[in-house]
Length: 275
Image (cartoon, rainbow, N blue to C red; front, top):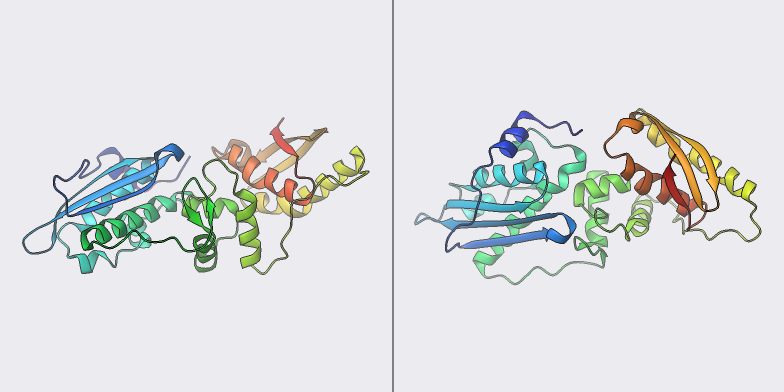
């Protein structure tokens, strides 16, 4: 259950300026409906060159609706020079804060605003810097590296929460983890293939060692834990404990953290399931 502020609840339950502006001066569209989050922002300038009307349409969660709604309130009555300075942190602060897993909703608002302003100015579509890592949300290695370094992100879950990268099909998870490790000056851990001649007992011991040294510490810090129940071939059966057992994101924890780390450090074909 996310811990939402009263301001987020208010903008989610009673969103302001929903819809599209007729004959808009600015149009900004970001995200992907196919992957779960999308936003279209439109605005119209008045004779005084200040934003007279702004509306939004979004396909997303409560935080996406609240971020879009408060953004329209923030920009109405302001000049383009003033709204160009609005950052995703400003949007989140206007809502009294967002759960870290939902910061990407405020980032989406800032990106839609940038695109709408660029549309008004007749500027060409911004060329993405670097190599696209998350194809679901068009997030590049440059975006991820910058967010990790500037925002102090330390895990795949952090990156997904901030940029949405890795929040779609999940095929980019290992690449994101490598970017995090490299940005933190860590040795890049390549996914391991099953060691030739590794017995089932050796595999179980390696899984136990990895759980103890690499996975449990992070879970314990968040009030949770994990117990190894059984290993059947490439299936690893575990039981989440403490806060992890009742967390609404337990499946994400299993796949994005536990399974990803075991695949990287033990064998690439392991599948983690809850017993």
